[in-house]
Amino acid sequence: MPVFPRRDDKNPRQATRPAPAELLLPDESRRLDQAAAEAGVSLERLMAAAGRAVARAAMRRWRPRPVVVLAGPGNNGGDGWVAARLLEEAGWPVAVAAFGMPPENSVAAEAAGRWRGVRVPFSPEAVGRAGLVIDALFGAGLSRDLPAEAEAVLRAIRAPILAVDVPSGLDGATGQVRGFAPEAAVTVALERARPGHVLLPGRDLCGALEVVELGFPPGLIEALRVRCWRNGPALWRLPVPGAAMHKHSRGHVVVAAGATMPGAARLAAAGARRAGAGLVTVAATTQGAAFLLRGVAEAGDIIADPPAEALVGGKGKVWVLGPGMVPDDRARDLLAKVMEAGDRLVVDAGGLTLCAGAPERLRGASIITPHGGEFGRVFGPLGDLAQTDKPEAARQAASLTGAVVVLKGSDTVVAAPDGRVAINSNAPPTLATAGSGDVLSGICGAMLGQGLEPFEAAAAAVWLHGAAAPTGAGVVAEDVAAGIPRAFAQWTETYA
Ligand SMILES: NC(=O)C1=CN([C@@H]2O[C@H](COP(=O)(O)OP(=O)(O)OC[C@H]3O[C@@H](n4cnc5c(N)ncnc54)[C@H](O)[C@@H]3O)[C@@H](O)[C@H]2O)[C@@H](O)CC1
Ligand SMILES: Nc1ncnc2c1ncn2[C@@H]1O[C@H](COP(=O)(O)OP(=O)(O)O)[C@@H](O)[C@H]1O
Ligand SMILES: [K+]
View 1 (cartoon, rainbow, N blue to C red):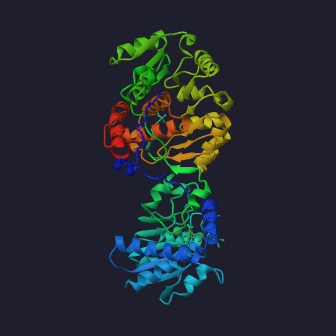
View 2: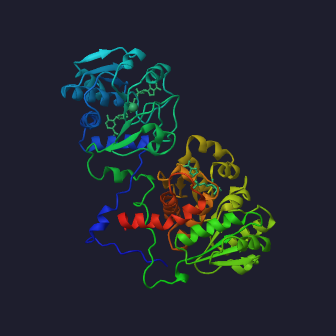
View 3: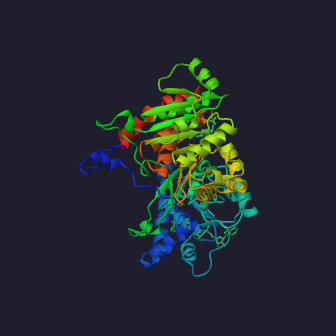
């Protein structure tokens, strides 16, 4: 079993380990406000802090210039009215274009009432000459599509946009656009980021994301028991070999290769070996083994056409089943035997196709790694849900199968059966190349083999995969496997 570096409070390097980056859902945000009010922190005070943060963000990033603040009818608009006043007090030329007024006696109405400056009609002309637009129309909890009138004004903007909470129209829970959302240069997120700041297309619309603390009393966020985080080293620790280790104590990953595409198994094996698996076996058919042996020679066992029984079972064994695999009877039989033996199992590619329309066949797997197409093939209607709410679709799939679901893409979502979700954001687009997913499934196997629990193993593997991928032209999947030591080094330098 793995030896993790001992936590040592006296070791100053450990201070760099970040706090988990919770991603708040709109409902959690509402509960937070309520809890704050009960703890004696008023919405007025929070709104003042939010408006101040927005004004400061503008002053930090731009020189004084004509600003138009688009203020909506809710508290998002309230933040806008506060920011307008503070920018004007700092000598900036500011005009407010209000899209409806806040309800009487509301905190936002009070903020609006304190505005003595210029007001302009809410129209496309109003934003035409602005040097900066502050978008405080709607926040992350938008409950319906953006009204056409608001869209017309947002579309007319030519100046950089500073968005409050989210670019209006962006759904903070899912990262989807409700009708329309503008592309911001900067988004000021309040207290914590939202899933929609990390999921696509939301992440791309936010521009630079600034998360500002509003001064909530300590302990309130913890009390929310948030179940969704940005994926990162705060959620897991990578296994680090200790002096007493030997190859048999670092997990044995068996990659089941198909007869026709053994290259995929080779990549998964490379991922597993680079990610620290002590032993890696590629179980191939005779034909597949011949292909493998003809390729660039790699150390590690290659067993030709082994009877499945010879390999299933045994301490520390982890299977990676699917890369390059044809969903035939042999594969079906192997999947059943591995499940029966209770070995830990990562299912990818051809292994998932074996379970098309039959997710119950995946019960017993530790981790499954579908891309969007495979996900739809296995989970039917959940595939449609994944188009609009990726975390929820992955969460339901995890609960259905009991496996940790890695729903891949440039915003890969990792979901556990108990409802935990990590959303990844470090993957460069160079990963969009054949075989990079195979490398990932191998890394998942290595993490399981070294003793990480499935959710931590999957989230760590996805982060490592992203950090391992070189950027720039000419990157192929082999380079991703080769980049894994560098990714480990990056983690060790900063977090270990
Ligand atoms: N805890 C926090 O994070 C804090 C949040 N604050 C601000 O509060 C905002 C959330 O406030 P609200 O809940 O009032 O939400 P919004 O400011 O987004 O506004 C909701 C209002 O807009 C209406 N509305 C929603 N969708 C609409 C549509 N498509 N067309 C027309 N009207 C629509 C609703 O009926 C409601 O009146 C955040 O975005 C943030 O800016 C701060 O003021 C203070 C602290
Ligand atoms: N544009 C992108 N940006 C970041 N990561 C990407 C992008 N496209 C694909 N990926 C990642 O690359 C991998 C591709 O896996 P997959 O689709 O299974 O390919 P293959 O089966 O060829 O290995 C996944 O981990 C996915 O998250
Ligand atoms: K907004």
